[in-house]
Image (cartoon, rainbow, N blue to C red):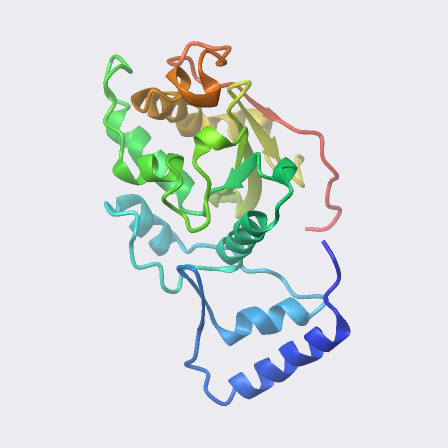
Length: 244
């Protein structure tokens, strides 16, 4: 990532200053709205990007039926940052960077809801898959997303609510594995990470099977695991933060 040119930074500060005269204004990025505090906080060297979802909002998302829910007051820096990365990715011509995509922050909530709706079934065949999840895999949502048939990996943010800690999850569609990027592995034991991500590990193969994902396209006969087997979860060795 390149540093912001000085003149652009000055213009951004000017925009924030003028914007404060009407704090009700918002800037629209795809389906994501950003208030002035968002842009102002990006300029501060010691700023902390917001990503927390309150307990009430979190429960609301889990209970929602429609993917296109009213996400006002819940859209934060994570969603906007991911959207801008996807948009920039589509604008670049280098095909080497087009082998991945991201979800938004609500993907994992829909996974958890789908898992809860089906977990009482004795057999995993014939799972009822939410349309919201099918739309994600097809690249219809979130904005500027790719059809998963055209990528090898999918990245999604995941918040461990109890610990108020975010991790990045990589879904490897080739090896059928789930990898976790955690900047503070000492905070949460491995068994807790695997327990929290169990809904994804179990729901994901059923979701892809519903769509005959591994029966056509670039993934035909490439899956090294039976679709009904939960995908393994492991942490990736990444640099660790030293602060709290």
